[in-house]
Image (cartoon, rainbow, N blue to C red; front, side, top):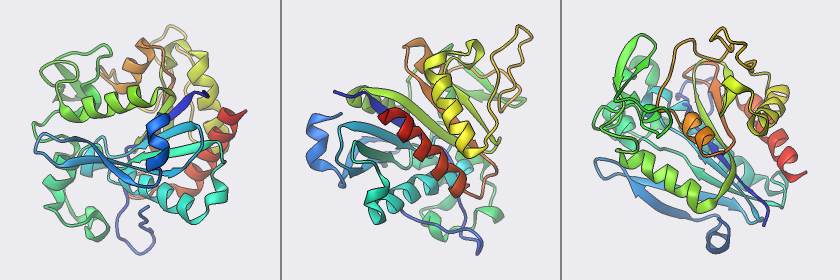
Length: 285
């Protein structure tokens, strides 16, 4: 069976006039394509769901909202992909099934919105920083079993990485779904550093770098160079991150991409449609 592709997204969009909101394994998943499925729950019991479009043998999984309301444009982008391919089924090559986990951190979203639908919430007028974390105030992109440490950093701010790798139900949910689908690549969408990262970027790991280069050329997002020993690979952030998804995936030999959007409010739709389309073409070849 052809390898699977997992795209994990973490980005956000507001209801401002110039921004358009859009809702947008193999085997047993085929019959359920296009339907929703609860695959896990957050700390506070909110469902984490996947929706599917397409019915091909190559699986592509998009996961949004790893940093909740702070990067809510990732959630909107994930939904936009769903809407676009449902409205334009011929645009999705027939070899693919697209799996969309739009919101990995529903508790972080709820902390900021209070339950207001994100399409109706004015994120520009809100303090979204508390929405970056889950209900236990853990940074979910510091909770993976890749060079995990009990405390990590977000810029110069110390953040809680959880009591152990995968201590949080949200990270376990996505990890388990990736294992269930058996992906060839995963892509996390985040914001807002305007760049690409990939598993093994420090070493220029070819299986992931090849895919990152395809996305880079189509989208125009910055792509880091392998570390030349200086400790600076030109990545989208300039501080050390521990316990991240890309480190975990590198350790298990899984190609992973992280796409950092330009800001916290736009979904960079043209860039990301071009990047994803090019990525699908590369995978199908």
